[in-house]
Length: 262
Image (cartoon, rainbow, N blue to C red; front, side):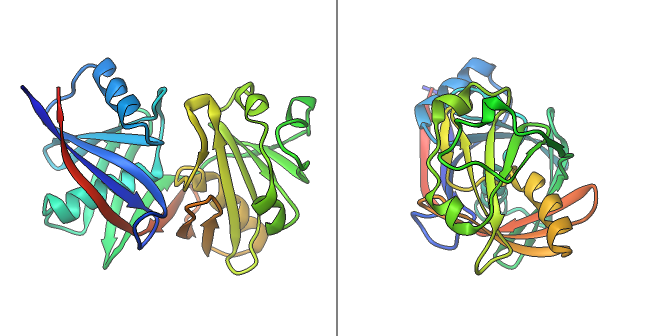
């Protein structure tokens, strides 16, 4: 019976049982999409990443339990961790290519992995009626990026205590909603809710920081920042604004090695 390697990595953390767990499945060739979706559904994690090495580049794709997504930060970090530390990649930079997001790079800096992603383009939008029932609190501002809405609140306590209406959020034409505020001990904090793609609350959302970093860089007048995602598992990120690109840095821990029998 054919087997595939599988790893589970806790990303954006330096200790187990925190950060965001992602499954990583290295491949020699791409299977059909249904097979990858079934594996992601069986894993029942926020994301499963699949990659195939092509010369000096790694093609990468990401699946939630429900669907393929355009970009995933924590599963890219987890994939880089596997390539660098388990597959013994020689070098400091991994070049990924996503059919949906283009070229992505991950550099290793001691035990930190630096993801360079395209910065999101966000625009301010009116507080429409469809947003009013999404949370127990009303935001002070609403923005729309390529994939997500971003709700900005007055302070960190609002983010910590907010109660989502998952049914209302799932009706929006977006992957999900980022909620954010200025942090007490870090520059900014956030949470992410994506019930439409099968992730009620994501523990740590690297891709959401392509939206968060440009916004908070302007608000705080800083190019380098630190951030925390305030899910139950929590995650810590170093952030850098580079104009049309952002650098998102995190650590990772290996939790599981195994085989998939297909």
